[in-house]
Length: 381
Image (cartoon, rainbow, N blue to C red; front, side):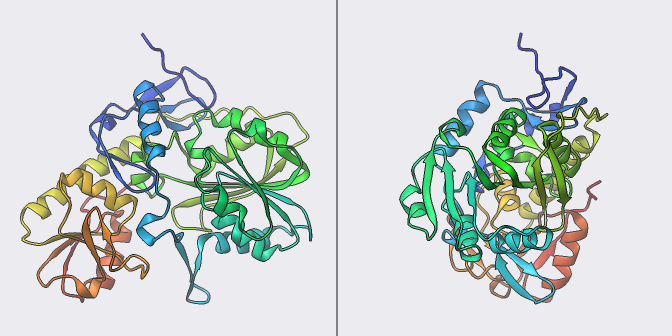
């Protein structure tokens, strides 16, 4: 019989969340995925995580073989709204501006983006720091030619960290660490690649306030701000800044290699926040199906993670999706049209799959249009 342990700290004091197995899942590129996953929380380090058994390994292999980055927006990364200027910026540009507000990078240096995808962050970094030499890594060569064609990029490495030279002055892990099965040992390997005085930037999703994050099949670990900062310190980093307000529903951390020994930081966690989130997901799914069953024309708001999961729970593709991103309106998602809020058919029902407080604000803003907007009845605690 397999004995489950934490894949972060290797403690055997873990709690499995049994009800999770019945929930439909999704992929990080916003595609539906069947139920059957296993989720646990470590009482020692506080990290919630999938159980990385053979079924999970087979799932992620299939997901990555068919991965499509930013496909809903035609390959363009998500935008971030700047409340101060009422403008939207690509997420990479926004993050670099936030980093610059907290630390000053040298005029020249070597930057490495681990898990660089199609090079959006490297492109933005090169535009702001044109005298830096840029490098990227990926597990396959799908975007190698594209990335290496970007200004300032010297090379995109394919494979594990062991193939990379050392000595980078800036290393970024943007939506990477949550995919790693053993993140603590991975961070220790990353630390060896950073030069003395170099900076590590980590961007992560979080399930706190974002319940659908728990359902992403290829995310091995689900972080809170506290568990992410704790893990960086355990890996031998000094955290300079950690926050959850640079990008909505995400965590941002800046750290440097520490000269002191790695810290051991015990924490008590029974995973009750995860249990509460699972309860909310189950109740929201049931409410959505009830609304859809009584509607002659049913839509789902959004074309990202929440919409992917709601589609799976519905058991069919809705009649339409509603989105406010101009890059997505007019396209299709799961074969259904993506409409603007003003183009929703009169008398249609639209379900907003977001925590109740946020969903009510959206409904109040869009409710003057032709559709009827429905908000989850239960609160997310």
